[in-house]
Amino acid sequence: MTARRPSLSPLLQRLRDRSPGLGASLLGGAVAAGLGLGSLAVLVLALWISSPYPDSGPGGALHVAAALWLLAHGVELVRTDTLSGAPLPVGVTPLLLLALPVWLLHRAARDATDVPAEPDGPPPVPARTAWAGVVLGYLGVGGAATLYCSGSELRPSWFWVTTCLPLVAAGAAASGVWAAHGCPREPVLRLLLVLPDRLRLPLFGSDAGPRLGAAVRAAGAGTAVLSGGGALLVAASLVLHGPAARASFLQLTEGWTGRFAVLLLGVALIPNAAVWSASYSLGPGFTLGTGHLVHPLASDPAPLLPPFPLLAAVPDAGPGTRLNWAVGLVPVVAGVTVAWFVARAAVRLGERDERGRRAPAPASPPWPAARTAGVLVLSALVCAGFLALLAALSGGPLGTEALSRFGPVWWQSGGATALWITATGLPVVLTVRGWRLWRRKVHARAVPGQGTGGGHGTGAGRTAARTVAEVAGGTAKGASKIAAQEPPRDTAGRTAKGAGRAAPSPSGPGEDELYDFVPAQDPFPPAWQHDDLARASRWAALREASAPPEAGRPAEKGPAPTGGPADGSGTDEATGTDEVSGAAGKDDAAGPAGTNGPAAAPGEPGPEGAESTP
Image (tube, rainbow, N blue to C red; front, side, top):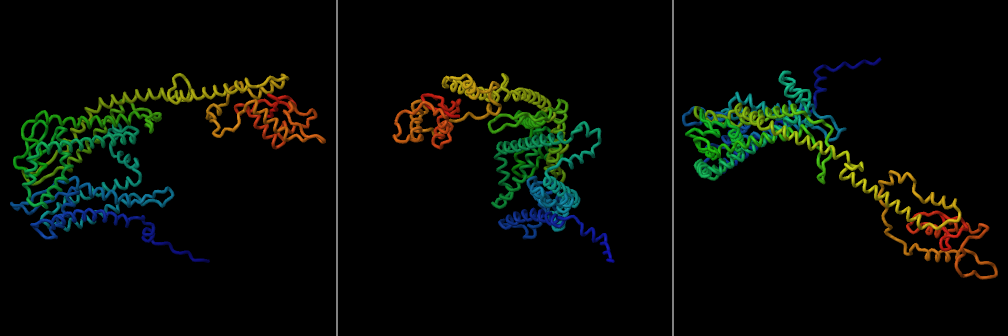
């Protein structure tokens, strides 16, 4: 008997069956954090080296780089080296800096999932394992950076570190894992189950997937229009306030390295200014200090603002003018854009090919008007959520008392976005839906006519009918020409037999023949012509060369006999058993147009004394 091996302990079994890819995911998250920190460290060290009057050593520059990296995640910083000695908060996050860690985390999580390109490749790393590894690795480096700069003059707030850093890491890593698996809808739909039925069913209905997809696409387009319109407003305001912006830029510093640093800061804050301008065009505007609002109807900035080019481009104090009211076109264009995207999802038309022709419409039925309006309202709410998030990230405090609040109020900007898009989008989406329904019906009436040959057919249908008619007509003309060139027959049976082979079928050509190509002309025509004189001459020469001469006298030279021998010995010449005469028979059997005509019996006279064979 053999002894059975003892089973492994539960701990060893768990270690052996652990999920693969956890170590690689941890390393990927740590590398993503290191790349972000290293990029900012290189930039800060380059500015510190080129500065003629540095305030601190390289350790201070590295502390500033770590603090800026935390600020890019939304962490509020505290500045301790002030004139009054009281710490001042710095909470305005440059949105351009925020894009760097989000992009690095997204790529790290997508690569950690390791989804194979081939269907029969190895299985990917589990989504939870990849996500947890990247987040833990990133947070480990983030915690070390927080400890490193916690004792510097620009130190982070631990409350915001424990709130913003995990949220950014978890959200960006989740988007990377989701994108690596092909952006499936099931995880998003499972999140909707958290909502109560009274709220979920009116918004999403029974088919939440198509509605949510169309709403997110339309909301993304509307947010892009609002952000782009805000950027255009910033550029126009900088042009109008050019002298004041230039004076503030030169007032901040004198050296070229300091001005380059101010320029980089201004570029990093341009997305913030675009969100502020979008909120300004929506109506709520933004605050420049506690109790100082700037909106299209009136502008009341704080009296003592720090000199900065973007702050110098703020509208002048006083009531608004018609130029300020014209910014309301931005949310109108955003509402029209959202309505257009929703109407396209509601009524789908066929795609256009390379020649500009539209394919048939898909089989999905168009949405009713109530459902289309509901998806537009859902798109407005999603767009409001996007803009409210951007407004919350783009603002923050720059000090205490009067400087404690800068930027738009997130809930006011979000509410105004929902109202604008709903009010301007509802009539547009219903109008565009009706127009697309009309186009779909017109196209549906035109498509069945293709290829039918009826009077209602257009395009390819008329071309096909015309081609069939031409082929049939050409066949009939060829048959009539062959019949006209046939010689009269002595026997009625033979004439009927030949006509039966030459005439087309009463039912007309077959279906395959109708849609076949018309035969082209021979590119290598023979040197001779198929006329009667040439045929008679060839027959005479061939019969003289093939017939043996009689004994005792030379062969007669003269015209060929008009018929074969009576005993049937000349049937080889007529039927083509002889190699030379058979070849000639094949050439002669092809009539003037190269088609087989009715054959004459052996011994019967052919046209002009020649014999024809089948």
